[in-house]
Length: 297
Image 1 (tube, helix red, strand yellow):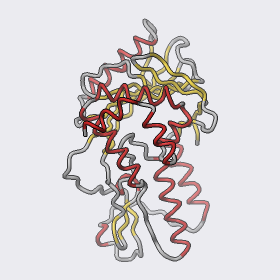
Image 2 (image 1 turned 30 degrees about the vertical axis):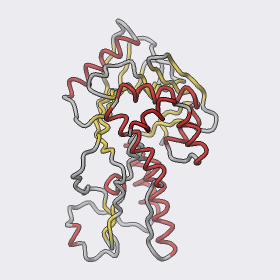
Image 3 (image 1 turned 45 degrees about the vertical axis):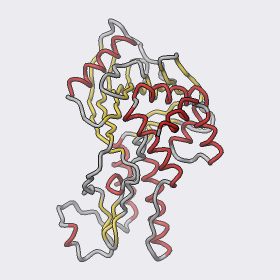
Image 4 (image 1 turned 60 degrees about the vertical axis):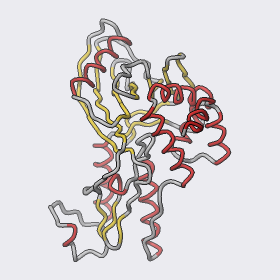
């Protein structure tokens, strides 16, 4: 189900470009349609699961021992940031992209709306996914995202003609302490359980870990759930969100410096919450201005 994978990552910021190979990881693009199709095929082949498609009242599903739901999200009353993005899959008339290098953050975009960057995954020399992404408290008009993508394409490929093959749009809530697994027979999973990482929106691997844990605990005879983040990781998330919210220009400097000083492998490990305490301290100490912000708090 992997459409494309990369072993070289790129971050472009005010101080210049950081381009590095990754040795311990592989950065992969998974198409949601392929993922769903293959998952449903595996379910069908198992012979132990019956698939139905119908509307149900979750509170009235009395014939089930446990209901896992990812549709109904809990209401949130506290303020939170949103990660919101609009992306185009573009195809150019001539070669433009380096298919071996994925740009995970390009900060040389309009920052007037708040912390923003362009995310670009090249699929070939003439095709790429290009997304304008922001971490702010309000969503923009879609025309604004599209204008930023057009400006980016003109910057990296001036005068080159291209077409947009498809468009995608998404909004991810970024809330610290959003873990809400449900209770009793009604269990929340996925985004409804608060599995999106607050400071990055990274969700896929956290959902996979939670799902594996659910399966293992059910097999052992009882269902046990535990939060996806430790208190230390939640504190770091809350700090990053404060920086993103209160000083987005400084946040650009923080993220650029983190990747420049720590390397892509360690940063991917950090973003996926697999770093040790020693590694977390090393990462934080690599950005001197981070500690100035902590003191301000």
